[in-house]
Length: 79
Image (cartoon, rainbow, N blue to C red; front, side):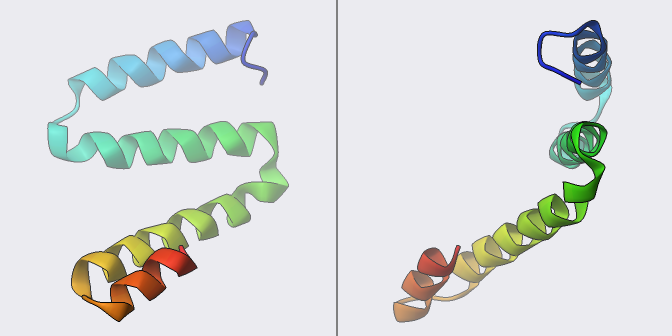
């Protein structure tokens, strides 16, 4: 699904409509899921890599918030 196709336009409209009707707390989770669906439609073989990168980046961010000092720098460099 290319960015200049009608399928992408329809996907974008549906995602935007659903996003606007969700509670604020659920919006980021929905956008993450919608992005995974978009990438899965483009190249299904890379979906596990995309999910792994998202989880890894999230965990590094949690480590930044949880730790301090030198550990914080290590998490930042790792991410």
